[in-house]
Image 1 (cartoon, rainbow, N blue to C red):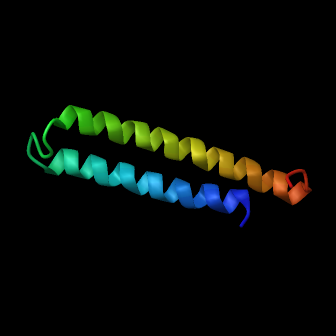
Image 2: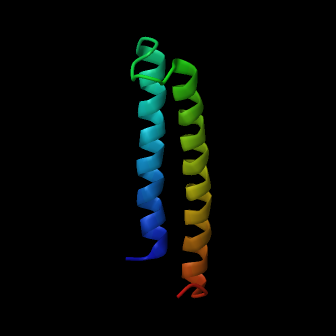
Image 3: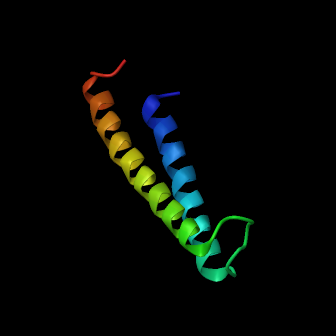
Length: 72
């Protein structure tokens, strides 16, 4: 499997985890999980979204490199 395909799958999974985390934080009551507050869940979802964006940029970069044959 190509590296760009693996990064794309990770991008989708991490992005989905960020959306689920944000939804749980907004719709759930405070103290949903012991030790995790609403603010903590929102910060975690923000970090997950940043990771998903970073993976998306890397995926596009690797697809461009694969088209020119620069990536093995």
